[in-house]
Amino acid sequence: MDTRPPAWAKMVGMTFAPPTADLHPVVSVSLLPPLPPRNTLEEVSNKAVAQWWWLIGPSLTVLGTVLGAVLLRWVLHRAIDRVVNSALTRAAGHASQTPRRSSRVLAQATGLDEARKTQRAATMGAILKSTSTFVIFAMALLTIMATLGLPLGPLLASAGVGGIALAFGAQSLVKDVLSGIFMILEDQYGVGDVIDTGEAIGTVEDVTLRVTRVRDASGIVWYIRNGGIVRIGNRSQGWSTAVVDIQVGYDESLDIVLPLIREVAHQVYGAQDWATRLLEEPVVAGVESMAGGVITIRIIAKCAPNENFPISREIRERVKAALDAAGIRPPQAGPPSGADQGGQGGSLRP
Image: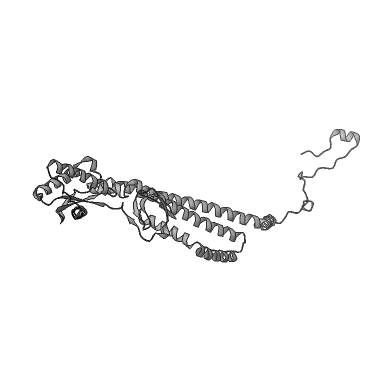
């Protein structure tokens, strides 16, 4: 590099000092502002978090508790629905595989059909859902109160005292509800059953956890508390028996009457109109009694629940028609004793 001054500089008499070899400027460290310490940012963030943690921490805990309770409730409800649906599916499969006539009739008439099981499963599902919802949200509420710093000791003590007072004051209500729950679990009776509660006999119209509504033969509606029922007679559960007594004259031949009545019983059992009501062929038990010139022949029929009265009427009608066709007369009632005494008394009058 040429360091000589240019020609025009010599003409004006100017001189230049040669430049230094290092053309890069050097900045002094003392001129820069001091850097902040490395941990200052962390200290500031920690300080901010510490100042606002009273609001951030409980809020996050409360939010997490509520979301967890809602999620747990949803999971339990889904599990309950799946259990109920699987139970209904198994019940429908068992009902479609009943081979015998009596089993099919009982499955339709004694509460073993799909509609009855659906009602019972839906009731139990509702009870389980309500119970799980109450327990979950009660625990979530206690957790939130503990997070917010509310004293739980006095609250729980007050709740305990209130629970004891409520138990003494509403023990009849608790008894009714518990009796209703066990009644549904054990399937003691349901809507449509004819029951004898000791106070009323009639058809069940509605069943709740506290009250059972029954309508008797006169049309009166009875509201019976479940806790007040000591014993229950269910006339619609299992099967019923129709007992028919046929009276003929003492001078009639049993060799003719008994085969005739057995034929009538066989015809009733084979009729399509009574195929879903009779479980077995009616049995002619034989002579039940002999008194006053009358022979009583008893017929016993095993039938579906609440079908004993219609079957008894049908058997009587058919037996009467068969006896009339065979020329067998019913027993003749003798004259009342009062008429004889009256006649004798009349002859003794002056």
